[in-house]
Amino acid sequence: MAKATDVRPQSLARIKTEAQAKKFIEKQIEEIKKQVGDGKVLLALSGGVDSSVCAALIAKAIGKNLTCVHVNHGLLRKGEPEMVCKVFSKQFKTNLVYVDATNKFLNALKGVSDPEEKRKIIGKIFIDVFAKEAKKLKGVEFLGQGTIYPDILESKVGIKAHHNVGGLPKDMQKFALVEPVKFLYKDEVRVVGKALGLPENMVNRQPFPGPGLGVRCVGAITRDRLEAVRESDAILRDEFKKAGLEGKVWQYFTIVPDFKTTGMENGKRTYKWPVVIRAINSVDATAAQPVELSYKLIQKITKRILKEVPSVSRVLVDYSFKDPKLNSATIEWE
Ligand code: XMP
Image (cartoon, rainbow, N blue to C red; front, side):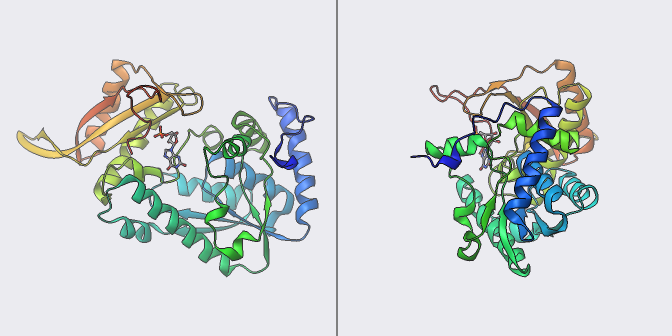
C-alpha cells in the first residue's frame, strides 16, 4: 500500500501559471522552514531541473544552512559545472562545495567497455565522493532531494528504484528527507523553476543521463573521444538553439563510437573518429521518434564539427526509433 504521504494532495491544482508557481513557492518556503528549523540540509546538486529547483527552494527558505555538493565526474556537458557554480554560489548564495573528481572517475573507468559496468562504477564513485564531502560537514540532519511525482509513481510499480538513498552509507540514510517538489510533474517543476529565477537553459534542460557523456563515448572511455563528444555536443546544442529548436525537441546529443574511419586532410589520408547525431521526440522516454532534421541544418552542424573538432572526420545521423514492442533502438547508444 502506498503511504498517505506519497499521494499527490487533491488540493494541489496543476501549476501552469507564474502566479500559481509563486503561491507554491511561498507555501514550500514556509513548510521547509517548519520542517528544518535551524537544522542543516545537504543536497547533491547535479544541475538537472529537479535538483536545481529543489536547491533553489531550500536556499530561499534557509539560506546558508543549505550546503550543495556539485560533483563533476568529468562526464558533464561543456559549460555545465561553471553554470551550476555561478547560479548557486552567486545568485542563490548557498554554501556550494564543488568537487572536480574527473581524474578519479576516468581512472576507475580506464579500459572498462561494458555499459552497465561503466554505470556501476560511475554510480559507486559518485556516492563515495559525495559521502566523503558530507562527512566533512558538521551537524547535518537533513538531505534535500529533487524527487518528483513520476519518480514516486514509477517506484511504486517497480520501474525505478525510488531515490538514490538506498545507495548512501548507513550514517547518511538516517537523515530526514526534504523533498519540496515531490508532488510535481516535470512541466510544473519547470514553471516553478522559472518563477524562482533560474536561468532559462537550466529550467528547459533536456533529459541528461546520470552517467552523462560516459554512455555517449561508446566502449572504454578515452579522454580524446570524450573531448570529441563534449565539443560536438556543444556545437549541436548551439546550432539547435540558433535554429529555434531548443525546448522543442525532447532530447538531442552526439555520440562517438569506438572505431575510426578513413578521412582526408591536406591531400593525405587520415584515420579518425566519426560523430553520430541523435535527435528524438518522446513523451516519457519509453518510446521515441527520430526528429526530421533539415539537410541545411545537418550540413551546418557537420561543417562546424569537422572544422572545430580535429579528431573527427565523419558525421552521421541516427534515425532509429524506439518502440519497446519492436526490434528497435534505445535513445542512448549504451
Ligand atoms: P534509453 O537509452 O534507455 O534512455 O532509451 C531512456 C532515457 O533515460 C536516459 N538514461 C539514463 N538516465 N541514468 C539516467 O539517469 C542512466 O543510466 C540512463 N540511461 C539512459 C536517456 O538519456 C533517456 O532520456
